[in-house]
Length: 464
Image (tube, rainbow, N blue to C red; front, side):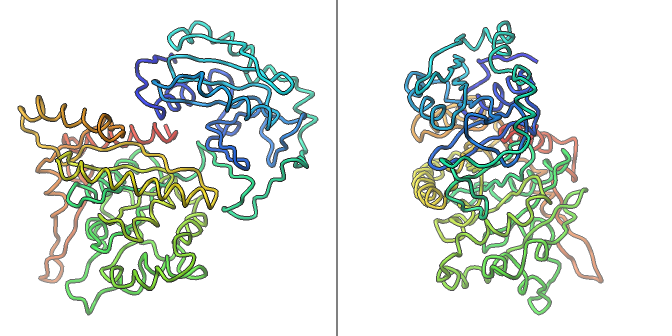
């Protein structure tokens, strides 16, 4: 395994390609001895690696912590982040800190109440200098007797750790490799391929062996239809009205996700789906009146964190309560867009909403939602458009709106429409029977595009 800094276009890729895929394995850290998005009080760390895995752990001079790793965007000047790294190391009594933007890799050592640079190299040289890094922060350099003496650890008096609630103001720990990841698919502009993305991405991720839950938070219930859960032809036989996402959000004590979720056969391997209903629209006011309505989904997802690997949330194309609930609960955000002018203008509203949501998340001690990027979808396959117009539209997104664009492009193809329109005949009645494009035509270009998208996303969130 080697590292190429030219492949890192943003902070997320520095994290996944340099730290997760290259450095941590090279340094001997196994998935159960490193963690991402660790928050201690007001400090939020990108990565925290252990000399030994001990839970709970203490942040003092006898701590088994090995190194803090901080990843920055390739265009960031690392000098601007040294002061903050100093604060991290001295406050948490961690001996080493690695700071990188992919182009440069630095290692600092804590010396009393300050830090000093002990290693530096360009990213392109790390493959030949990895042994020097191992000698400094490799997991095997820590004395075994120190590790054994720390097998039983108590919380430092200076940093009390509480894990009684997922809203704890002291400590939040998220295991990058093992914990469930929640992804919201959101754009406040409709008709940009949101539902198509959710359904086929779910199938593609499921095909890679991940346990997937889909949550439909849009009152139009398009994802509920697209996953084949609407089997009634008359509202009299509506079996979703009394058990759907609204009931999950309405009650803290009843309607757990495990009871409301339904098995769907739109994918060869079954996927659980929490359905939506048109009644969601008229019940929004009642739900908004509940003091903790924005937090209930977090609690309900916590209850099933060991049952699923990935949760995909389809959201309404608006700035309403349901969109906010999804963005508060999610770890990551994907913004599907056809890249047309109106959709692009909507990105301003999306960014403003994200800013407001992150302010709320900060108040409940949740880290900011991480935007994986704008996903180009429903894109015309016209050769001239793809060759000349599409590159210009993609280029506009980071320049004008400050958002990254995902590598995968989902084109508008006939197979995507056909698989969603499949029906079956039941007692002389034609019933919708949609399937994913992965199952409808596995060798099609559309299926391959969604498999590439699944791979890209799983890499970005540390699951490949």
